[in-house]
Amino acid sequence: MKARRLKRKMATRKKASRVQTVVVREKAPINYRVALPPGQRRLSFNDRWDYAPAPEASNYIKIKPRYQLFIGGKFVAPRSGKYFGSINPATEEKLAEIADANRHDVDLAVKSARRAYNNVWSKMPGRERGKYLYRIARLIQEKSRELAILETMDGGKTIKESRDIDLPLVAAHFFYYAGWCDKLQYAFPGRKARSLGVAGQIIPWNFPLLMAAWKLAPALACGNTCVLKPAETTSITAMHLAEIFQEAEMPEGVVNIITGAGETGRALVEHQNIDKIAFTGSTEVGKRILHSVAGTKKKLTLELGGKAANIIFEDAPIDQAVEGIISGIYFNQGHVCCAGSRLFVQEGVFAPVIRKLRDRIATLRVGNPLDKNTDIGAINSRMQLEKICELVDSGVKQGAKLIQPRLRLPAKGYWYPPSFFTGVTASHRIAQEEIFGPVLSVMTFRTPDEAIERANNTPYGLSAGVWTDKGSKIFKIVNKLRAGVVWANTYNKFDPTSPFGGYKESGFGREGGVHGLAGYLTLN
Ligand code: NDP
Image 1 (spheres, helix red, strand yellow):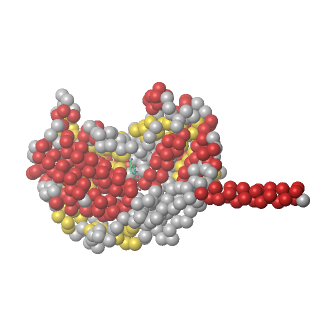
Image 2 (cartoon, protein in one colour):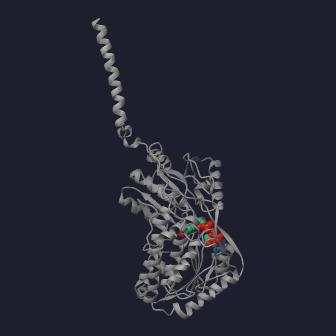
Image 3 (cartoon, protein in one colour):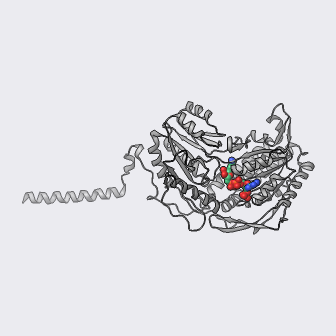
């Protein structure tokens, strides 16, 4: 009897204690992850919380139905009489019509730039030119939110990047080069610096306003006048920049902006009365321009493609390195010439790096670029999306293993999920060709010498990254990498004071810093 009572009592206690345990867990769940050794911890946010939509308001942004050419300080209709549509790649909606300049229009722009050079800009003292550049920089700052929204709508890049990276850098470039206008004799001591004349400048679609600033600011600071051709898919912000030039009361014709496709660019390159061509774009078009300019008096700088190596050593801080991999390849949808698109991981840390990378890409938010929480926006055009898909297919066919997070992409617009390949060999197309999208090729190495050899095994030479906790190793490796820019324990950091440019098939000449002035001057 006693024993039965005791048994019942124990059973009730057991039940009570079980209930109690459940209650305690509900109040404060035990975080088993903390108990795991660092190497085995997993990163996962998806099952814990989600972000509420945070769209940037765009209903007050004024987009004109039609944008004309900017020649001689005025907006003028193209002699061609033709226009083409500019599409928002996130919605596939037509935003505006853009003037399509033909050879006649190009000629008018070049003549206008020549007049402005001869009559006004080349005669103006440097300190006066500087005032205009400062004024432009301040106006860009004033209108930066509006310009960032336009940049995002026209190009598909996320608002957090256009707002926090592109636009501040655009203004910073004008500020920086405004400071050089009256100090050119100090930039090149003992030499006499003279402006060249008229500069023809052609830019791509991945950083439309920033590329315009990289080209225009140093050219103007050195006393040249300009004819700028933006890329066909991203011309709108360049025309808003033209409005800023008007507002800053820039003398007529100092900057002319002609929109159009590749033919317009070709007409500019082939124009007889141009003194300098500055081109940023693909290596293929760069080679054509090199042929066309050869044998003429035109000065040339080329900023072309890249296939950068991002090298992770075993002694690197792995969590930070994984963040560097993310910003290296997924920043701006991977539409970055210096993107760290070939990842070399030292064998000993291959497994944890891949595990962390796989977890991390699952946390990236892909979608509406105007949402402030979005990490990866829209691919710039259908053509670019097709190029990415074709190269990814080739990677799968050649035997590499594709890793992508499971996510739902918007029904309309051009999208590609953050992806990476393992099992890549040096002969695969995805290890050699520029994908220019959010796709990474991962390879391994054993020794520092092997890392250097494999990193340099590319026709390109624009940029690279090195991750290690040893300063001496950084110096040793960096000196042997054939790349114009090498980041150590960071990636994709830009500053107007720092030169940027490539070796080999990534082009020649430097933009940014004092070096950026040299391309727009003759030095005697
Ligand atoms: P493209 O070379 O096709 O175009 C670049 C610019 O040149 C555009 O304005 C384009 O006009 C124009 N263009 C096209 N054909 C000709 C021609 N025959 N003569 C003169 N101009 C021409 O490159 P994408 O626009 O497709 O840009 C992507 C490429 O650019 C990538 O390969 C990337 O690596 C490279 N790039 C390099 C950078 C660097 O700093 N090194 C920076 C950014 C991009 P349209 O667009 O109207 O056809």
